[in-house]
Image (cartoon, rainbow, N blue to C red; front, side, top):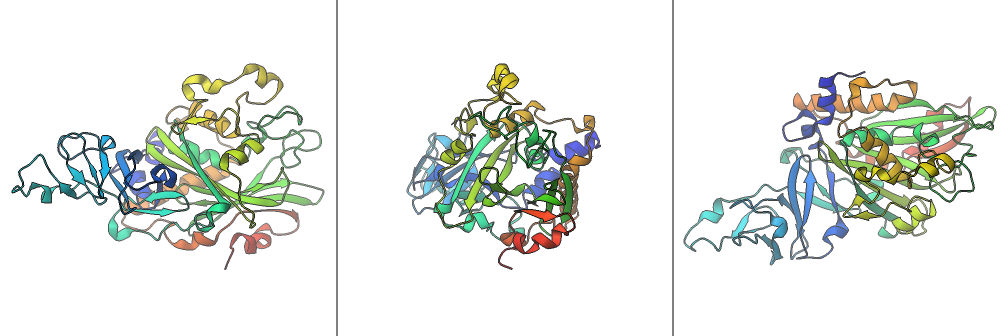
Length: 427
């Protein structure tokens, strides 16, 4: 397992920490475009990598991402007035543009050139795929824009949302790559229930006797991270092969099927972005592979049984940690394995239940945890490369063309060769 020092190395993301410096080398989601829908609209608070920031859309439609606190007396600019291409502090009227330059200082005499020497910390942004992305690293190291396939499809084929999660970002990230938990955590007791979860008759997860199928994992390291296959037995002589991707430092791209079938109907993913050491924002996105418009995120969740009980207030769960996720022991006994409503909430509950930062020195990992080892190794290696002044994986746009897939393959067929044309689209 890992040591206390290694766990600290992987989880701490504040300014100056090795992992924080690694994460700053990538574009990361800072907010949804819908949160800043109008020019000169209200600013919003943003927490990223242990920093408290404020974002606003100015009169020209540009996005500013600044230190939250005014350079004068440190009042919060969240209370400020967004007007005439700048954010004006409500305390003494100091005004800043999207680059943090002080434009006006009405509390000082006109002949005073003090404002020319004032500049708030600011970070560049790009708007893509319904998301406002921020880059917090060295300017000369700015990577190519995050043109994932899902950010480039028409808006009618994509939905994106987010939810606050009360735990360290690595717990959320590792949960995304745990291939065995759906057969337990998300299992329903009967196929007749309308609650969220996995049908106990699912051929993907269970054999005819109801026993859980083991998922053999195979991992292929790439220049963007890795792709991995979860391989389960299917009919005699064939396997169910689910191939997904990890893109450094926190992206998962996976397939989703219609009604539990093997045909891939949508591609989806999670991005757990660190707010601070003990909180993260879980971004989720989906897009359709066909030309049909995608339904609203809420409609998709409701159709799949995920929406009920997962209403959010300010991107925080109603079924929250301080309410024990509203676990229902009667439901747990008779209807679902977890007793918690909503697949996403079930995931959050487990990850949050580990504590703000799980003590990985107490873990006992097994053969089904290969992908967790791979994620930790690549993150650790990446942070060490940045410390040495070298480039980590995932900075080149080779991930633009990748896609997950699901296939039923003869056990005699090498799965890597069989899926290669499908996971590298457009090449």
